[in-house]
Amino acid sequence: MKKEKLMMKRISALVCALAFLGGGIFMSCSDSDDDSDNLASGEKTTADESGPSSEPASDSAYDDSALSECTLWVVGDSTVCDYGDYILNKEAKITDATYFYPRFGYGMQLHNYLSGKVTVRNLALSGRSSKSFLSEENYKTLKDGIKAGDFLVVGFGHNDEKSDDAERFASAKDSTDTEGSFKYNLFNYYAKIAMDKGATPILCSPIVRYSDKDDFSGDKGHVVASGDYGQAVVDLGTEKNIQVVDLTSLTKELYTKLGHDSTKYFHAIASGSSQTEPNFASIDGTHINCYGAKVVSWLFAKTIKNSSCSLKAYIKTTEEPSKEKDLVINPNYKYVAYAAVDWTKYEPIERYTTKSEGWYGTAFGDLGGDATTDGSGYMAKEDTAGTFIVGTPKKKGKIQTSADGIALAFKPIPVSDNFTVTVKAKVSDQTTLAAADLATGGFGLMLRDDCYEPIKDASVGKGNYVAAGLYPKSASETYINFCRESTLLETSDDKISEIYAAGSEASFTIERTGQVVKVTTVYGGNTYKKTYTDFDFVAIDGDYMYVGMFATRGTVVEFTEVNYEKTGTSQGA
Image (cartoon, rainbow, N blue to C red; front, side, top):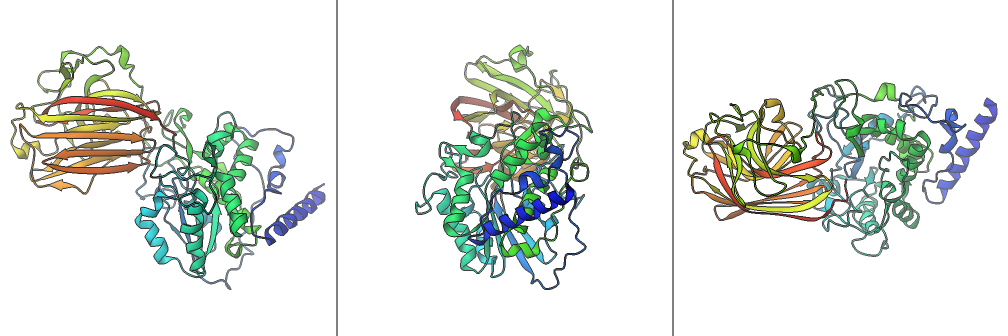
């Protein structure tokens, strides 16, 4: 029986190799039964099993001494890009510092399967499409750096299908000759750039999204109203005789075979149900973790190894990943219990009362005083219909690297909503502290992941948010527009050498369309804008975001002309 299976594998491999001779296009013709004997009877693996079973390929016989050094350039979106490798480098700065299983792009794991003669340059960026990537500095780096003998891996698709975002959308229905189409972009701006330099392009179709129903039709498999994005990549490869790794088909096949109870371990998980166990309610259905990224890289390596692509000589191994070895919990993860507040049942004290339906008041974080007593001075209330008074006249609260403490008048918003919110602000005459005492204070409009009833607790002052606002970092320096993600406070490049005072006026806008959030601050006759792409608003609360007016540390602000408009439904990540 074993001899028969071995013979069938060899025949199947030969069939695949012949399929590549005409154009190097990947065809799924042998992977369905060469790695999964334990699934032949239709049985599914349990959640504790790592996936299809195979004997690991040995590195011992691999010899790359005759190979030249080269660079493997990688471009693509959030399923490909580098988030910081906490496995190779325990001290690495990682994007998802608070995640249980942080995101990993598969570009981060390709090195495991490549000769040491290959330098991997991962230029992929989260949230980008084949269209929007063209305006990035990383695209210029690619064009200037790629050279003869190099390879270019191209992995777009997830964001090209976002028809609600003109800056990223590219239709998969239109032909390669239609300017601005998905296929036009892939060929003219990526594949052709590589070929003109004497490099070899490799087009990857997008990996499927997780489905707890094991259904990969529709957007889970990238088949939407604007076309079939996986098939478009395959068709382009056939048309232009370019190597394709059809990750859409490969991941769909693997996910279907293993079932969702196993493949959920491939994905990023925002939180734990404890310090050591994942909370699958916080699963990220689009983004993969370190194990999932290695699985995808393995699929890539196997495909290239069985192709006519010249990169095959640089594939040192096709050893299969395992859950036991390759799934690693974020070593810096700290479990924090979070229970979303049912704000419809919220009974605030007077200083946090509101009149407009769906709006609420609170203060939380590193407040420097009790949020519920007069001594702290905190307030976030709707004084008259449409006029909100927010902040504290006391030298309490802050916006600082370690944690925030703020007053907030806010509205909960389902994570699926696109919206625009605008507001005007005037610093109240209750703001009487000297400029030096206002440092680390601030005010503005904020969109955040989490929200709490009034509480003094620095541990809840580290949630993710973006802010259209003013942040006086020191007595002589005010930053305009800022954010906090994975506990890290980051300012924009815009700053002024003054601090607001009583009577200062500003207006703020936040626009959310899918993964893209744009913030605008108008202050002192100048307009300051900042765009955040693929920002994480579901790291803690997976159901709601919270948009609202904030102020802190000696700052009291009157917010008026508050206008919230739902503009549609997000198409997701």
